[in-house]
Amino acid sequence: MTTAPVKLLIDEQIEELPEFMAVPSDRVLMVFKGATWEDALHSAELASIENVHAWSRRACLCGEWTITYEVKV
Image (tube, rainbow, N blue to C red):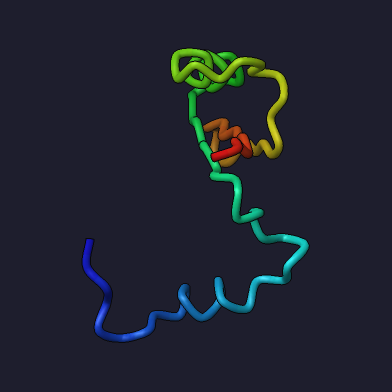
């Protein structure tokens, strides 16, 4: 992976993220998408998420479901 030679706007916004919105350093975000809620849950299940109903965030944008899990490293 390479580092961009110029700091991008998104990089600046991430640096300014309030601490309460940041992901703890001992966790990673796993994100799954699907055309339906069930498809997104099934994708998480295929990735060996133990309890697919224990999501931390979810959204439906333009008809596509996204669910996020905070997983301990």
